[in-house]
Length: 233
Image 1: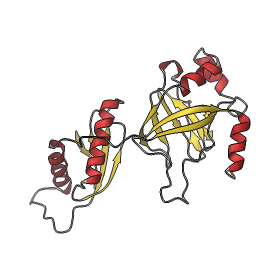
Image 2 (image 1 turned 90 degrees about the vertical axis):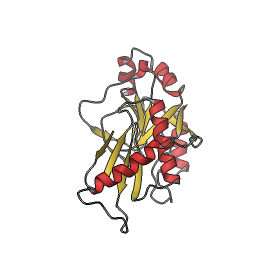
Image 3 (image 1 turned 180 degrees about the vertical axis):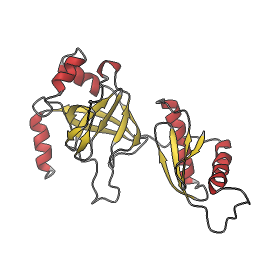
């Protein structure tokens, strides 16, 4: 399904659900269209099960009488959709990210473990054993939406947002994510990473990208503090 998003963008919906096979098709289309640009497309933004295209019709192109710019661009997209996606998806980059799960740093870990009817150590073990796919970045610059966590540690969002520090690792339903900046947030927090996910001094300010993978590993509170100190944070 293709629908407008304002007067200069449209979204191509591949299924409207969290599904790895759908997301891999999204990424294949995204990479194909990046390598072989669609006329008029200014920017492509992949998400869980969709691609949003920001566009501007090239000056030499003439729109037929009665045809809207959206209809012209939609026809271009539909032509591309008839073609097979790229034969292979770019190799997924695996990031191993350290996380301190010490309750001294993240006191609410204890209540979340109690909610899951687990010892804190068991919750941490389940969170670190999986490799997570990054489905999209959003909400904050560089915020990765990843999935899916083991159903035993699926946690609800908070009833209302609270202040959250940069580097906080949280769970919302079966998604897990990392706050790259200090913000208001409603995810259930279970840890804190010393890794900086967003840095405007770099040519590419976001550390992660959609299509990458993440595996967390546990570090002690002293290791966390040393990492921060070495980074001058």
